[in-house]
Length: 328
Image (cartoon, rainbow, N blue to C red; front, side):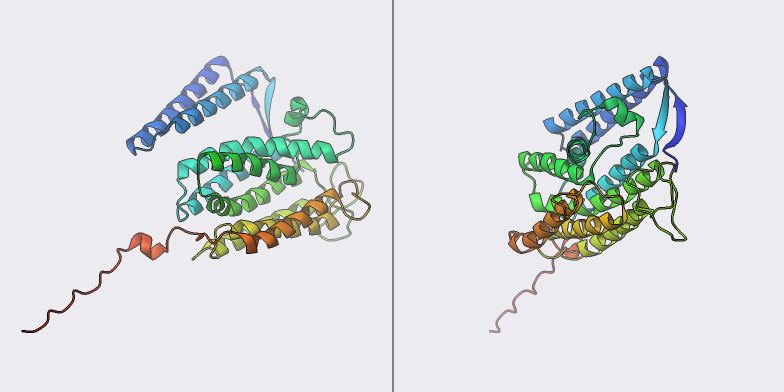
Protein backbone atom coordinates (compact mmCIF):
# COMPACT_ATOMS: atom_id res chain seq x y z
CA UNK A 1 0.00 0.00 0.00
CA UNK A 2 1.30 3.43 -0.94
CA UNK A 3 -1.36 6.11 -0.31
CA UNK A 4 1.14 8.93 -0.96
CA UNK A 5 3.14 8.57 -4.16
CA UNK A 6 5.55 11.43 -3.48
CA UNK A 7 5.79 14.82 -1.77
CA UNK A 8 6.70 18.17 -3.32
CA UNK A 9 7.35 21.60 -1.79
CA UNK A 10 4.62 24.19 -2.19
CA UNK A 11 5.18 26.49 -5.21
CA UNK A 12 6.49 29.97 -4.46
CA UNK A 13 4.84 33.04 -5.97
CA UNK A 14 7.22 33.19 -9.00
CA UNK A 15 6.45 29.54 -9.77
CA UNK A 16 2.72 30.19 -9.39
CA UNK A 17 2.96 33.11 -11.80
CA UNK A 18 5.00 31.11 -14.33
CA UNK A 19 2.58 28.17 -14.26
CA UNK A 20 -0.42 30.47 -14.62
CA UNK A 21 1.27 32.19 -17.56
CA UNK A 22 1.85 28.80 -19.22
CA UNK A 23 -1.80 27.97 -18.70
CA UNK A 24 -2.86 31.28 -20.30
CA UNK A 25 -0.56 30.64 -23.28
CA UNK A 26 -1.85 27.09 -23.70
CA UNK A 27 -5.50 28.15 -23.58
CA UNK A 28 -4.77 31.04 -25.92
CA UNK A 29 -3.17 28.71 -28.47
CA UNK A 30 -6.17 26.39 -28.25
CA UNK A 31 -8.57 29.27 -28.89
CA UNK A 32 -6.41 30.41 -31.82
CA UNK A 33 -6.60 26.94 -33.37
CA UNK A 34 -10.38 26.88 -32.93
CA UNK A 35 -10.64 30.30 -34.56
CA UNK A 36 -8.45 29.25 -37.47
CA UNK A 37 -10.68 26.26 -38.06
CA UNK A 38 -13.70 28.54 -38.05
CA UNK A 39 -15.29 26.75 -35.12
CA UNK A 40 -14.71 29.26 -32.30
CA UNK A 41 -17.89 29.84 -30.30
CA UNK A 42 -18.90 31.53 -27.07
CA UNK A 43 -18.89 28.13 -25.39
CA UNK A 44 -15.17 27.80 -26.14
CA UNK A 45 -14.59 31.14 -24.47
CA UNK A 46 -16.59 30.05 -21.44
CA UNK A 47 -14.64 26.78 -21.26
CA UNK A 48 -11.33 28.66 -21.46
CA UNK A 49 -12.41 30.96 -18.63
CA UNK A 50 -13.46 27.99 -16.47
CA UNK A 51 -10.15 26.20 -17.07
CA UNK A 52 -8.09 29.26 -16.20
CA UNK A 53 -10.19 29.90 -13.09
CA UNK A 54 -9.69 26.32 -11.93
CA UNK A 55 -5.95 26.47 -12.60
CA UNK A 56 -5.64 29.76 -10.71
CA UNK A 57 -7.63 28.43 -7.76
CA UNK A 58 -5.60 25.22 -7.65
CA UNK A 59 -2.28 27.10 -7.75
CA UNK A 60 -3.48 29.43 -4.99
CA UNK A 61 -4.44 26.49 -2.77
CA UNK A 62 -1.14 24.72 -3.46
CA UNK A 63 0.83 27.86 -2.60
CA UNK A 64 -0.68 28.09 0.88
CA UNK A 65 -0.29 24.39 1.64
CA UNK A 66 2.78 23.47 3.74
CA UNK A 67 3.66 20.77 1.22
CA UNK A 68 2.09 18.97 -1.73
CA UNK A 69 1.39 15.30 -1.20
CA UNK A 70 0.46 13.54 -4.43
CA UNK A 71 -2.02 10.89 -3.29
CA UNK A 72 -2.30 7.60 -5.16
CA UNK A 73 -6.08 7.64 -5.41
CA UNK A 74 -6.27 11.22 -6.65
CA UNK A 75 -3.47 10.62 -9.14
CA UNK A 76 -5.09 7.46 -10.56
CA UNK A 77 -8.46 9.22 -10.72
CA UNK A 78 -6.89 12.04 -12.72
CA UNK A 79 -5.04 9.68 -15.07
CA UNK A 80 -8.17 7.59 -15.58
CA UNK A 81 -10.25 10.65 -16.36
CA UNK A 82 -7.70 11.97 -18.87
CA UNK A 83 -7.29 8.66 -20.71
CA UNK A 84 -11.03 8.01 -20.65
CA UNK A 85 -11.65 11.44 -22.20
CA UNK A 86 -9.09 10.75 -24.94
CA UNK A 87 -10.82 7.44 -25.69
CA UNK A 88 -14.15 9.24 -25.95
CA UNK A 89 -12.70 11.80 -28.36
CA UNK A 90 -11.36 9.04 -30.60
CA UNK A 91 -14.64 7.12 -30.66
CA UNK A 92 -16.62 10.30 -31.19
CA UNK A 93 -15.07 10.90 -34.61
CA UNK A 94 -17.04 8.15 -36.34
CA UNK A 95 -20.17 9.27 -34.53
CA UNK A 96 -19.99 12.84 -35.74
CA UNK A 97 -19.24 14.35 -32.31
CA UNK A 98 -16.68 17.21 -32.46
CA UNK A 99 -13.63 16.62 -30.27
CA UNK A 100 -13.92 20.04 -28.62
CA UNK A 101 -17.47 19.25 -27.56
CA UNK A 102 -16.37 16.06 -25.86
CA UNK A 103 -13.55 17.91 -24.10
CA UNK A 104 -16.05 20.49 -22.85
CA UNK A 105 -18.34 17.67 -21.77
CA UNK A 106 -15.51 16.10 -19.79
CA UNK A 107 -15.15 19.18 -17.59
CA UNK A 108 -18.83 19.22 -16.66
CA UNK A 109 -18.92 15.47 -16.12
CA UNK A 110 -15.87 15.64 -13.82
CA UNK A 111 -17.51 18.21 -11.54
CA UNK A 112 -20.85 16.41 -11.49
CA UNK A 113 -19.21 13.03 -10.90
CA UNK A 114 -17.24 14.23 -7.87
CA UNK A 115 -20.32 15.85 -6.34
CA UNK A 116 -22.51 12.80 -7.01
CA UNK A 117 -19.86 10.39 -5.74
CA UNK A 118 -19.48 12.32 -2.49
CA UNK A 119 -23.23 12.72 -1.90
CA UNK A 120 -24.00 9.01 -2.34
CA UNK A 121 -21.01 7.95 -0.21
CA UNK A 122 -22.19 10.17 2.64
CA UNK A 123 -25.74 8.84 2.33
CA UNK A 124 -24.73 5.16 2.54
CA UNK A 125 -21.80 5.45 4.98
CA UNK A 126 -22.52 5.64 8.72
CA UNK A 127 -20.65 8.46 10.52
CA UNK A 128 -19.43 9.84 7.20
CA UNK A 129 -19.12 13.35 8.59
CA UNK A 130 -19.87 16.60 6.72
CA UNK A 131 -21.07 16.34 3.13
CA UNK A 132 -18.19 18.35 1.68
CA UNK A 133 -15.29 18.21 4.12
CA UNK A 134 -12.71 19.46 1.62
CA UNK A 135 -9.85 19.16 4.10
CA UNK A 136 -10.43 15.48 4.81
CA UNK A 137 -11.05 14.72 1.13
CA UNK A 138 -7.72 16.27 0.14
CA UNK A 139 -5.92 14.57 3.03
CA UNK A 140 -7.27 11.20 1.90
CA UNK A 141 -6.40 11.86 -1.73
CA UNK A 142 -10.00 12.47 -2.86
CA UNK A 143 -11.25 9.58 -0.76
CA UNK A 144 -14.81 9.06 0.42
CA UNK A 145 -16.36 8.73 -3.04
CA UNK A 146 -18.85 6.24 -4.50
CA UNK A 147 -18.50 5.08 -8.11
CA UNK A 148 -22.22 4.66 -8.60
CA UNK A 149 -22.80 8.16 -7.22
CA UNK A 150 -20.14 9.49 -9.58
CA UNK A 151 -21.78 7.68 -12.49
CA UNK A 152 -25.16 9.19 -11.66
CA UNK A 153 -23.79 12.71 -11.03
CA UNK A 154 -21.72 12.64 -14.21
CA UNK A 155 -24.69 11.31 -16.18
CA UNK A 156 -26.95 14.12 -14.97
CA UNK A 157 -24.53 16.98 -15.61
CA UNK A 158 -23.39 15.44 -18.89
CA UNK A 159 -26.98 15.00 -20.05
CA UNK A 160 -27.77 18.65 -19.36
CA UNK A 161 -24.73 19.76 -21.36
CA UNK A 162 -25.48 17.42 -24.29
CA UNK A 163 -29.09 18.58 -24.49
CA UNK A 164 -28.18 22.27 -24.27
CA UNK A 165 -25.45 21.83 -26.90
CA UNK A 166 -27.94 19.92 -29.11
CA UNK A 167 -25.64 16.96 -29.64
CA UNK A 168 -26.75 13.46 -30.63
CA UNK A 169 -27.42 12.17 -27.11
CA UNK A 170 -27.02 8.42 -27.61
CA UNK A 171 -24.02 8.77 -29.92
CA UNK A 172 -22.31 10.79 -27.22
CA UNK A 173 -23.21 8.10 -24.66
CA UNK A 174 -21.65 5.43 -26.90
CA UNK A 175 -18.52 7.55 -27.31
CA UNK A 176 -17.90 7.84 -23.57
CA UNK A 177 -18.86 4.26 -22.56
CA UNK A 178 -15.45 2.59 -23.14
CA UNK A 179 -13.71 5.55 -21.50
CA UNK A 180 -15.84 5.08 -18.38
CA UNK A 181 -14.68 1.47 -18.12
CA UNK A 182 -11.04 2.50 -18.64
CA UNK A 183 -11.25 5.25 -16.03
CA UNK A 184 -12.87 2.85 -13.58
CA UNK A 185 -10.10 0.28 -14.08
CA UNK A 186 -7.32 2.80 -13.48
CA UNK A 187 -9.04 4.38 -10.48
CA UNK A 188 -9.36 0.98 -8.78
CA UNK A 189 -5.57 0.73 -8.87
CA UNK A 190 -5.60 3.94 -6.83
CA UNK A 191 -7.98 2.24 -4.38
CA UNK A 192 -5.47 -0.59 -3.94
CA UNK A 193 -2.56 1.79 -3.37
CA UNK A 194 -4.69 3.83 -0.95
CA UNK A 195 -5.81 0.74 0.96
CA UNK A 196 -9.52 1.53 0.71
CA UNK A 197 -12.35 -0.70 -0.59
CA UNK A 198 -10.47 -3.76 0.72
CA UNK A 199 -11.67 -7.32 0.35
CA UNK A 200 -12.82 -9.95 2.77
CA UNK A 201 -10.47 -12.35 4.51
CA UNK A 202 -8.82 -14.95 2.30
CA UNK A 203 -6.19 -17.67 2.53
CA UNK A 204 -4.81 -17.50 -0.99
CA UNK A 205 -1.28 -17.13 -2.42
CA UNK A 206 -2.22 -13.70 -3.82
CA UNK A 207 -3.97 -12.44 -0.69
CA UNK A 208 -2.65 -9.14 0.70
CA UNK A 209 -2.50 -7.47 4.10
CA UNK A 210 -3.23 -3.78 4.67
CA UNK A 211 -2.34 -1.81 7.82
CA UNK A 212 -6.04 -1.56 8.71
CA UNK A 213 -6.64 -5.32 8.30
CA UNK A 214 -5.47 -7.82 10.88
CA UNK A 215 -5.32 -10.69 8.39
CA UNK A 216 -4.83 -11.41 4.70
CA UNK A 217 -7.69 -10.32 2.44
CA UNK A 218 -8.75 -10.52 -1.19
CA UNK A 219 -7.15 -7.81 -3.35
CA UNK A 220 -10.67 -6.87 -4.40
CA UNK A 221 -9.50 -3.56 -5.87
CA UNK A 222 -7.25 -5.38 -8.35
CA UNK A 223 -10.05 -7.81 -9.20
CA UNK A 224 -12.23 -4.84 -10.09
CA UNK A 225 -9.40 -3.23 -12.04
CA UNK A 226 -8.82 -6.33 -14.17
CA UNK A 227 -12.53 -6.63 -14.88
CA UNK A 228 -12.62 -2.93 -15.78
CA UNK A 229 -9.83 -3.38 -18.33
CA UNK A 230 -11.70 -6.40 -19.74
CA UNK A 231 -14.86 -4.29 -20.02
CA UNK A 232 -12.87 -1.63 -21.85
CA UNK A 233 -11.60 -4.21 -24.35
CA UNK A 234 -15.07 -5.69 -24.91
CA UNK A 235 -16.62 -2.28 -25.49
CA UNK A 236 -13.88 -1.31 -27.94
CA UNK A 237 -14.52 -4.49 -29.94
CA UNK A 238 -18.26 -3.87 -29.97
CA UNK A 239 -17.69 -0.26 -31.05
CA UNK A 240 -16.13 -1.42 -34.32
CA UNK A 241 -18.08 -1.70 -37.54
CA UNK A 242 -21.64 -0.48 -37.20
CA UNK A 243 -21.37 -0.21 -33.40
CA UNK A 244 -24.24 -2.63 -32.59
CA UNK A 245 -26.55 -0.92 -35.06
CA UNK A 246 -28.49 1.52 -32.89
CA UNK A 247 -26.99 4.51 -31.14
CA UNK A 248 -26.98 3.97 -27.39
CA UNK A 249 -26.65 0.20 -27.39
CA UNK A 250 -22.94 0.35 -26.58
CA UNK A 251 -23.76 2.41 -23.50
CA UNK A 252 -26.45 -0.09 -22.51
CA UNK A 253 -23.87 -2.88 -22.70
CA UNK A 254 -21.66 -0.84 -20.38
CA UNK A 255 -24.51 -0.51 -17.87
CA UNK A 256 -25.09 -4.27 -17.89
CA UNK A 257 -21.38 -5.10 -17.57
CA UNK A 258 -20.86 -2.56 -14.79
CA UNK A 259 -23.91 -3.83 -12.92
CA UNK A 260 -22.71 -7.44 -13.10
CA UNK A 261 -19.15 -6.46 -12.15
CA UNK A 262 -20.13 -4.55 -9.03
CA UNK A 263 -22.74 -7.10 -7.91
CA UNK A 264 -20.13 -9.86 -8.04
CA UNK A 265 -17.40 -7.73 -6.48
CA UNK A 266 -19.58 -7.14 -3.41
CA UNK A 267 -19.12 -10.86 -2.68
CA UNK A 268 -15.35 -10.43 -2.29
CA UNK A 269 -15.01 -6.95 -0.80
CA UNK A 270 -16.06 -5.68 2.59
CA UNK A 271 -19.63 -4.62 1.79
CA UNK A 272 -21.50 -1.50 2.68
CA UNK A 273 -24.15 -1.87 5.40
CA UNK A 274 -26.91 -4.25 4.26
CA UNK A 275 -29.95 -2.74 2.63
CA UNK A 276 -33.27 -4.43 3.45
CA UNK A 277 -31.28 -7.36 4.85
CA UNK A 278 -30.78 -9.08 1.49
CA UNK A 279 -28.41 -7.10 -0.73
CA UNK A 280 -25.99 -4.26 -0.17
CA UNK A 281 -26.79 -0.77 -1.52
CA UNK A 282 -24.21 -1.29 -4.28
CA UNK A 283 -25.83 -4.56 -5.31
CA UNK A 284 -29.25 -2.91 -5.32
CA UNK A 285 -27.99 -0.19 -7.66
CA UNK A 286 -26.23 -2.83 -9.77
CA UNK A 287 -29.50 -4.68 -10.35
CA UNK A 288 -31.11 -1.42 -11.47
CA UNK A 289 -28.23 -0.80 -13.90
CA UNK A 290 -28.62 -4.26 -15.45
CA UNK A 291 -32.38 -3.80 -15.85
CA UNK A 292 -31.93 -0.36 -17.41
CA UNK A 293 -29.32 -1.72 -19.80
CA UNK A 294 -31.45 -4.65 -20.95
CA UNK A 295 -34.62 -2.59 -21.37
CA UNK A 296 -32.74 0.23 -23.04
CA UNK A 297 -31.25 -2.14 -25.61
CA UNK A 298 -34.73 -2.81 -27.03
CA UNK A 299 -36.45 0.57 -26.62
CA UNK A 300 -33.75 2.85 -28.03
CA UNK A 301 -34.77 4.83 -31.12
CA UNK A 302 -33.60 3.41 -34.43
CA UNK A 303 -30.82 5.91 -34.92
CA UNK A 304 -27.64 4.57 -36.61
CA UNK A 305 -24.78 4.21 -34.14
CA UNK A 306 -22.23 5.72 -36.53
CA UNK A 307 -22.48 8.50 -39.07
CA UNK A 308 -21.37 6.34 -41.98
CA UNK A 309 -19.28 3.32 -42.81
CA UNK A 310 -15.53 3.90 -42.70
CA UNK A 311 -15.26 3.30 -46.45
CA UNK A 312 -17.84 5.97 -47.16
CA UNK A 313 -15.83 8.41 -45.04
CA UNK A 314 -12.52 7.71 -46.79
CA UNK A 315 -13.45 6.69 -50.34
CA UNK A 316 -15.55 8.61 -52.86
CA UNK A 317 -18.69 6.86 -53.97
CA UNK A 318 -18.35 5.22 -57.39
CA UNK A 319 -20.53 6.72 -60.09
CA UNK A 320 -22.68 4.51 -62.32
CA UNK A 321 -21.48 4.12 -65.92
CA UNK A 322 -23.04 6.56 -68.46
CA UNK A 323 -25.93 5.11 -70.42
CA UNK A 324 -25.03 3.76 -73.86
CA UNK A 325 -26.22 5.77 -76.81
CA UNK A 326 -28.82 4.16 -79.00
CA UNK A 327 -27.58 3.33 -82.49
CA UNK A 328 -28.92 5.18 -85.52
